[in-house]
Image (cartoon, rainbow, N blue to C red; front, top):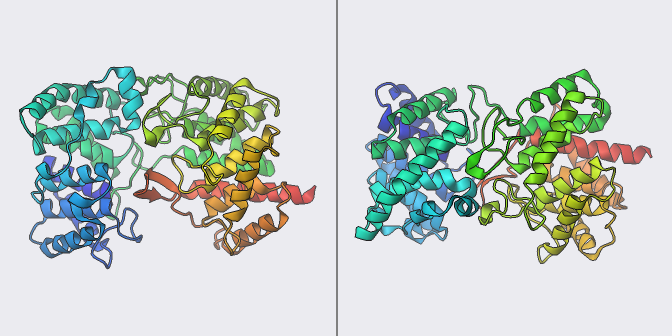
Length: 514
C-alpha cells in the first residue's frame, strides 16, 4: 500500500500529463483497497496499520481532495487509535507520515520531530555503519525535510550543508544499481527519491529515469508492488534459490534442470563492488543483475550452488561467493546483513544469518571445525534471547533464527550444550496445538531443525499439519514472515515458503527411511 501511494505522489507531481491514466487507475485502486474500518493495510486484505493508512491518506488528499474528503477524515479517526501523528510511539514512522502529510497540505511538519540530517556528514566508514541500508530513505527524507520543515537558522544551515551530500549519495547508489532509475529495486524507495528530488528542483535527469522505472513497474490493476525488482516482470533471486536447494535435497541435485537453475543464479553474482556499503564484488542481491548485495540473499544462493560437486561452473561461483562471505564477517564473529560491523539496530548482528553461515561453512568442511564457523558458533552461544530463543533481522518471530541456530549447534557437535538445549526446548514449546508453528515457512524451519533429534511426536504432528494444509496445486499458502519494516510491514514470499516446506518434508522422509 505505501508503495502504491508513494508512486502516485511522484507521478502526480512530476509526470502529470503523461501519467494521468496511471494516476487515475492508482487512485481507484487505493480507494477500493481501503479496509472496512476506514484504514489501509500494507498487504491488501490484512488489518489496517499506521504506515499504510497515512501514506494512502496523503496521496489521496494530494491528488483527489474532493473525491477523498470523507475518506481522509475517516482515516484520521483511524490514526487516533494509535495516538495520531504526534502521538505515535515510533519516531521514524511519525517523521515519515508527517512529511507526507505536510506535502499534501494536511499537517504542519514543524509539529513532528526533526530528523538529524547531520548524520549524513559523518565520515564515510562511520556513516555506513550508522545508516547502513537506510542511507537512501534517510537522504531522501533529508531533502524532503529541508523543504517541508526548514526550522530555525541553525537547522537551515545544516540543511544547506547536508543537501549536496544527500544528492551525491543518491547519485552514487543509483549508478551502482545500473543507472536505471531504481533505488533498492523498490518502487516505494524510488518514488520517495523522485519526489524529494523534484520538489528540490534538482537532478531532472535522475527524476526522469525514476519516473520511467515507475511507469515500467506498475501492475495491471493500477498498483505497485513493494520490492518489485528492475525488470518489467518481477525478478527475484532468493525464492528460486530456496526452491533449488530443496529440490537438490530431494535427490535432484544433478538434474539438468537444476544445473540450469544454478547457472541462472550464478550469473547474478555481483561483478562490481558496492561502495555505498564498502562491499567487494562476489555477493548477491535479491533482485537480479545489479543491486544491494547482502549476506542473507547470498547465503540462499551459496547453499544452492554447493549441492553438486561436479558442477564446475557452480563450484567456481561458490568459491568466489564463500570468499566474499568470509570477508563480510563482523569482527565480533557474527554476520550483519548489509554493512559489516553495522551499528544500526535494524542491520545489527543477525543470529539467523550467522547460524546459516556457520552451517554452510561446516557443511563445506564435512562438519569439521572451521575457524570462521567456530567464531560464529561462539557468538551465538553468547547471544540468545532471555527465553532461550533467537531473533532474525528479516524474519518475523523467533522460529526461523532459533531453528537454524539449533541446527548449527548440532552440526558443530554442541547439541548437549545448555544454550543449545534451551533453544531446542523453546522450539518445541512454540509448537501450536494444531501441530504447526503458525505458518508453512515457520513450520518448515522448525520441522527441518527437529528431524532426527528424538522429537518424533512434534515432527509427526508438524508433517500432518503440512499435509492437511497443502493446496490442490501442491503448494502452500505463504505467511507474512518476511520483514520489510520491523514491527510495521511484513510480507509473504511464495517461493521461499515452498522451498522451506519441501526441504523439511524431504528431511523427514529420509529420516523415516533410515
